[in-house]
Length: 199
Image (cartoon, rainbow, N blue to C red):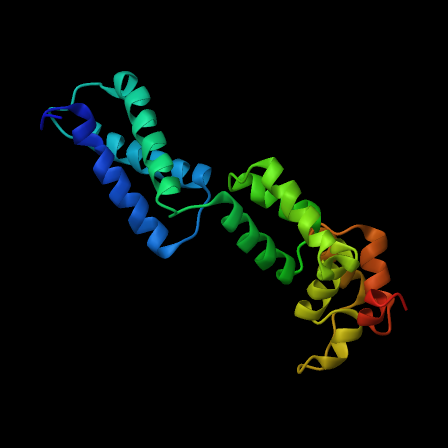
C-alpha cells in the first residue's frame, strides 16, 4: 500500500487493528460493537481529512475498502481471542441482571451491543437451567432494583430516613421497564426476599 493510497490516509488495516487492540485494552465489546466503533473512527477521520486541502472526494470509493478492512480486523480479533460475543454476552448479562434490569431490557441492550440473538437465547436458557434460575428472572431483577434504590421493604434500611412516596417508587419501576403487577408485588411485600422462596 503506497503512502498516497486513500485507505492509508484514512486508516490502514494495521491502524484499525491497533485502534481495536487499544479499545479492547480498556473496554469489552462484541464483534459487531467493535466494528461499529472502528467505522465511526474512520468516518470522523474522513471528515477531518476532507476539510483539509489536497484530499479529493474518495468517500464513495473508500466505503467498501474501509468496510472490508474493518471486517478483517474484527475477524482477526476473534481469531486471536481478543473478543468473544459469548463471553461478552455472559459478562454483560450478569452485570445488568445484578443491577436489577428486567429480562426484556437486558435482551434489548445485548442486541444493541451486537450480540447475536442465538447467543442471547442460550444465555437465558443457561441461567434458567442453573441453580440461580430457580426463580423468575424479572422477579430477581425487581428485588435487586428495590434493594439498590431502597424501595418498599428496603426503605427502612435507608440512612436518610425519608422514603419516597409509593407512587414515585412505582413510577421508577415502570421507567426501568418492569411490569406493573411485578412492581406492585415487590413494593407491597414485607420482605421481598420471601417472594423468592415462594412466601
